[in-house]
Image 1 (tube, rainbow, N blue to C red):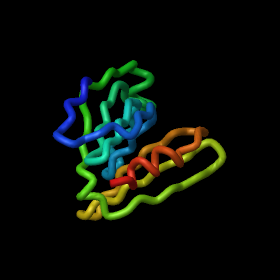
Image 2: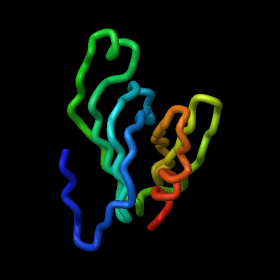
Image 3: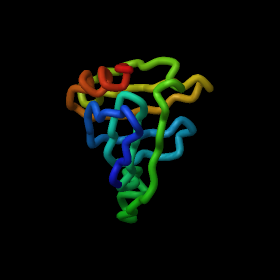
Image 4: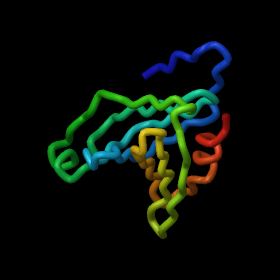
Length: 112
């Protein structure tokens, strides 16, 4: 998905990682692009057990405006480094970078 930038918008970074929606609606593999104004996630594959077994491709995405972000938490375990983005409505969106360092992604998410 080509990202159309708004006036004054700059890309801060791109990461291929997993997205876990707030309602426990699965696990998706795709690309997160973080700009100074928003987070844009382009899902490519359903990475849940049923999605992997069925080799399910996904077309869809998520866009979060940075002014809607109430906070960002980091959870680091041996094979799972996560950025948990909490929105003003209380919903939590989780981005899992696996064993890789999530710090640069979190810094981009928090940058305004």
